[in-house]
Picture 1: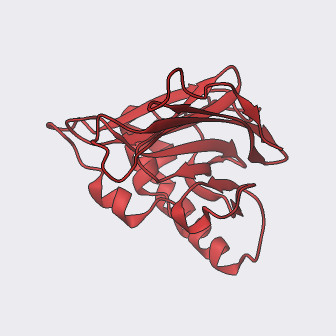
Picture 2: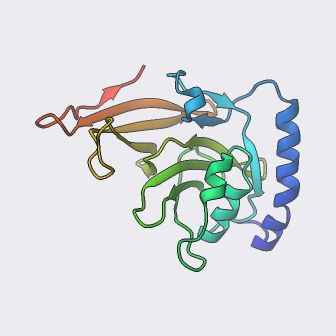
Length: 207
């Protein structure tokens, strides 16, 4: 770890401004895997310019992860607006750390949840790169939850039919991603159909 937390977040505003300027000038590049609605038709995933959101002089803790999300230009305005404390200063997020990308610092997985029922609203992965944490994955189609499992990024999504209640989804998709060539590639997917006996729970490789 290098430096202090204070130095890291003092530099945040400057880093974000530079990231916004760079994204305005850029015409391509790789970075954040976007699972959002705007890119749902891209089966192989989409790459956007990575957004630097904080100095990586120290791995952010849970409170600082909230600042990371709020300062990130890749995160939607709606998610930022809804990310508020449920009680006192207790924000509805889960934060985990691990090695997903082989970077010099631990990668950070942030899940934004809803208050009360704890439904996953959005998931993000941040990677240390060139002295800053950069958003390299996002999924903003709830319900969604991301976690680290044996070096894979595993994203779980509940799938609802028209008349399904919140606690009774029709099926569940579990998608495993692996970091390759500066982006997350979808490697395996599993769908469990709750309406069928036993479901279809055998993993299917993608690509």
